[in-house]
Image 1 (cartoon, rainbow, N blue to C red):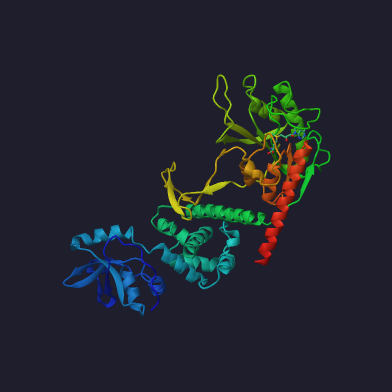
Image 2 (cartoon, rainbow, N blue to C red):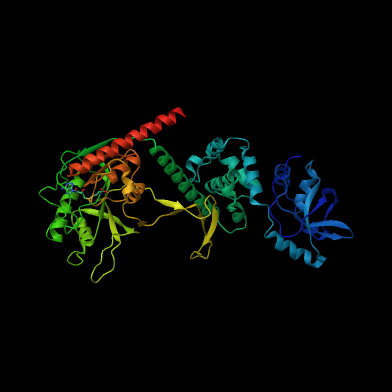
Length: 515
Ligand SMILES: C[S@@+](CC[C@H](N)C(=O)[O-])C[C@H]1O[C@@H](n2cnc3c(N)ncnc32)[C@H](O)[C@@H]1O
């Protein structure tokens, strides 16, 4: 005997009764029309009984009043001796009422219909790929497309199963049905049950799964990308030059260009600065004008879909001077489009005592693109509680009163807020304990930008590259990097770091090959 499918939980006790002992209740046999038993026979035979039949007991005999066709079919299935029955304790005058109410809920389960549909189409036992070709999944949305099966068989299958569906909806239904059978997580969503109970339409359920599948594919791609970048050893170029003329870099060759300009208002003194002395300007206007000159140089080097990110600090020297707001306005005036601002909140800001204001603890990261650019963006996510589970969640009701659902996943998008400590000397490793830099950015800042706007193999440019924190991060992300820095001491240190990184990576890949 074939193994029965797991039965859904019933609300009432179910009893097993020998098929030959079940009689049709006289009240029902009077009005009952003879229905085809083929479909019930087939699914009972292969799938087992999906829904119990409903009976009463009279003089010790079992009488079915709902599920008569199943009894008739059961008699014709060789190995099926017993049927699951729910025995109701009701008088005869309530039987028809009960039958009507049951008929609203206990029609053939959609799972049975789907199975029978597959059978009628003649695709059972074929591979998933073949099934899809036969059913015309290449043009899933076209109602005039009946795949290799052809319109006639489609129509017959719809008729026999009572699935009065267009070809496109039938394909969507089978998409859901197959996914439920293949994937336990999807099955747990219970979409077929919900369609069966009229709680969600086939098209909406299909939309949910498509959306979920798209996210899953993206996740797989992202994980692949992360795994791949571990083994990539990119190239680097360092230029000990001023960032105000980037003629030595090929035009439109760069995908991503983050930088942190020298702090305004001479907050820090940098080594070996050129005549521009960026950061030492007397006014905020001059500081921003020089900043724009640097940004314009970057613009020439960026590809059409490239991204520039300015990591910039506010200044309170001589009073608040709206550096960040003015920088944003100047960027827009200079033809940049601002995609958004990341707020970097420092967990352990350097203590500063201002006369009339709090301890400042933030910087901004202005993410910009060229006009009309369409940058690469991989939505950054973090693990959600209950990771690994798919759950069908109900959101608000739609205007037409329909229930709305979405598939909760194991990841949630991260926000534009980055909370992280400031740079820690340990990030330099033990390359050169004597090296000092006034304003290195922590790796976490670069990782936030790179994790979203870059993928391995891209070209990275950083002007004002300082200690090389950004260049190291970008190489770890699998990018080819270019650094431009006026201070030869910083350049020398950065070179040591990048060589060290490349060395470590090649040692690791040799180890991996040997393993
Ligand atoms: C805020 S720091 C950048 C720190 C860097 N983000 C890091 O993590 O180490 C600014 C850097 O700009 C450099 N700099 C100043 N004027 C420059 C110029 N005209 N061209 C290139 N670099 C310059 C300074 O030497 C300093 O290293």
